[in-house]
Every structure is written in structure tokens, then in C-alpha cells.
Length: 573
Image (cartoon, rainbow, N blue to C red; front, side):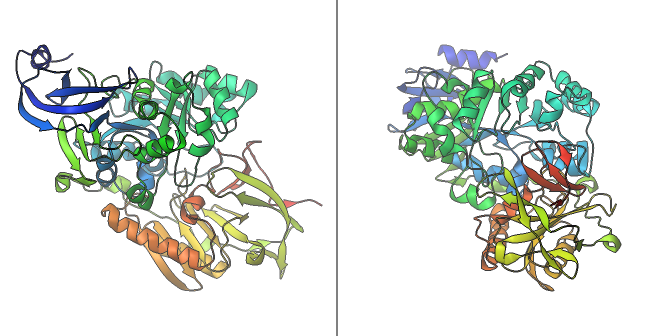
């Protein structure tokens, strides 16, 4: 219910707090550019049009005004920073709301992790709409740091911590009617329930939609996205650091279907956030491709607000939140000023009063912890055949291939073969010190020497290591553990670069610029070692995610995602 004061301003009976004069409104309802004033009161838009008196006035001199941008799906943890630092990066670019899935920290610290993210997100200029992690653990084929069942998620909903159900990553379980998955879906009846169903089609897709999934952000082709649209799902077009789907999917957009399309970033590293941007980058790229500007803004604002039932934002209209992005160039929009809740929070790409964004202390429940049974840490792979299954990593994709290749055998063991870009990969349980370790081989990273390791490994976030030799892999693994979690790159017995992640082994409490600097040093070292990938660290983090086809590795073994079962590393002749 709106206040009487807001209505009095809307009627013109009392002055507004602020009037933005002579602006050109991007009207996502009508599709027009509307010349009008905007009157703000109490953090809301009271009126649009002429004749409003105000205590304060700003002459926009013909600048454009768009609704604050909304990210339809993001994991804040992938910025490697806490919500306050993430907000400091995206708010100056016009992003005022994000639908955030905290399943990264939830897989480490359970409900305590979700509540911590909620606490960290209070009193920010960025509205963080938390969704309940539906896949903790993602499947039964991994060791996770926590388990969240339907009762846990229901409690988070009842206490107001979460808004809806986050991506249903266990799409095989959803399609097959797994009782626990269906219980989670039922607990969020009447709430937005996000999907995650890469390459799902035909009757399985029908079952997925029938179960209650309402969106998908994993589409890689126009045909896949068109089918999902036709079955009633919102399609969230993603442009992440390691999953570039925007250019492939923009040909889908037309006047008939654009109201069911949204934009999301999913996972973006610090350098991409600071250099390219967030949803603003996607809007610019879409307009440059040829999407009509108001349509692009609609996909970045109103559509997302409607999918998430956030009807108090997403447009410039009476009663809506005064979340506004002001810019000069409609063909290449870049925020000059950003208002959040009626307050000017950013100007010319910089956050105002950023020092006021408090970072809470990190409680023991989400402090970093790396528990590895080092006495059972073994990277050698006894040869049990001449041919092996190799994970085929693909540049700019989280999908992988299954490749059957000849193994390199030395002294009775299968070893890495950097000359053929076949590296060893290990995933080690870091939550329970069980000694569980999965071993395999991977192609596509291009390392000629050394190893990379980290505790950022979607979604279980165990310790993952990729390298050209066992000694380098062991050094990198120990370096990460000694930091209490983080990322490292090593060669032989020397660690060349490292980034501590003190919060659950996923996030730093340092400013984003500092994190970016150390992360860039890691990338420089990886590229010096021969990696041909733009970001091998982000790519590595998805190689243990056993809900995205085709072949992945967890601490429990090699997983054929399409068959949803373990497979042997060695292939019979």
C-alpha cells in the first residue's frame, strides 16, 4: 500500500522531494521515448509529466532516463567479493536489482551461508533478491559441505530470507519426479521457480515445465531457446565470463516474443565487471547487434521484474521504486547518474559514499575451511587400459565433450601429456576430510607446464586441480589449503601467484579492485604456462559441475551427465 504522502505528491497537492526535469524517458510499457519530468517522493516515483513542484530540482537537459537494470540470475560469489563490493561495481553501471542464487556459499555452509548473504546485502543501494538454493548438493554424485532439504528451504521462505526457488539444476531428478525435488518445488507454489536445463528438449522438457520450472538460462542455440519459449518458460539470455550465449541467441528476439526474454550474467569475474560491466554491457551489445533500444531495456528491466513478480520496479511509472539510470547516448547507453530508492548513488561510473557500505564480520559458520585427508592424497593413476575418457573443455562454454583418446603410460601409470593438451584433473573432498578424490584427464586448457588449483568449483566447491605434472598439482593444492581456501598457480615446488578467499573459500573481504589485481596475476601466470583460454580459472570451476553435459569429474568419480551415472576412466578396447 502506498503512503498518503506519495499520493498527495502524485495529485500535485504537495511538493515532491526531487523533480528530474527535461528528461527523455525510456518507456518500457509503450515502447516510446517520452519527454517528461519525473517527480520522486520517499524513494518512489510519484508522478510522470509536467507541473510538479519539488524541494529540489535537477535539469537533465535532454538526457535519457531508463529504469534501473535488473540482473535475472547471478551468483555474487563468482565476483569473488562480498555483496557490498559487488554492489560498488555494478550500481555505477545502472544495475539496481539482482536476482541472486547463493547456492555457492550454501554448498559450503548451508542455511548459515544463505543467511550470511542476506545480512551482507542489507542497506545496500543494490536490491539483492535472494532465491532459495534448490540444489545443495547438486546431485548425489558429489561430496558437499551441506544439505538443504525442502524443510530448510521452506523455513528460509517463511522467515523472509528468500523470494523464490533458484535454478532447478537437478533437471534429471525434476523430470523423473524425484520426491525431494518435487517437495522443494511445491514449497514455492505461487513463487518464481527458476530453471536450469541445458539441452533439454522434447518430452523431457515438457515434464520439466509441467513440474513447475518457469525459466531457463542455459540455452545455447536459437532452436533450444525457441522451444523453451514455446513451452511457457521465460528465457534468460546469459552473457557470463565463461558462457557467452548472447550473440548466439540475439537472432531469436522479435516483436512477438521479446516480452518473455530477460538478460542475466550468471557468473562474472572482477575484471569483466570492472571493464565490460554487467547487464549494461549486455544492453549495449544487444543494441549494437540491432535490437531496438527500448526493447533491449525492456528485456533488462520490465520483463525481469514481471517474471520475478517484483511489480514495484522495472519501469518508470507512478508508485514504482525510484531506481533510475540516466545516460546520454541511446545507441550506446552508459550510466552518467544512477538513483536507487530515490537517492543519487553513483555518478560518472563511481559510487558515491561507498565508504558507508559496511562489510559485516565473518562468523565462524562461513569462515573458510579446507579439510583434506593429506595422508590419502594420491594423484597417481594406475593404467587399467590403453584408452581413456577425456573431458573436452570448450572455450566460452560450460558444456563439455567426451573424447576417447590414447593414454600416455609411464611406469605403469597414466600421466598427463601436455604435448597433446591432455592434462590431469583432480577433485578432492575439502569439506569432510573423507579422502574422497576423483581423478581424470582434461583437454582444452593448453597448459604446457605447472598447475592451477582452487576451492571455487561449482557447485560442491571442493578442491579442484588441473596440471601438467603431479608435483606442481600437489604444490598448488597445498597452497590453496594453507590459505584456508582460494586460488593458486604453481610449478614444481614453487607457487607463483595466489588469491586467498577467506569467506567459505569463495569470496574475499577485500575491495574488488584488489581482488581483480591478484586474480589478473593468476591469469598472467596461467597464460605464461601456455594456457590458451581467456580465463582458465573460471573454466576450471565448472569442470566438476555434474549437471551440465557431457563429461564432468567430482570427488567421487567421472560422471556422464546425460546418462546421470558414473563411468570408468579407462575404455575397453
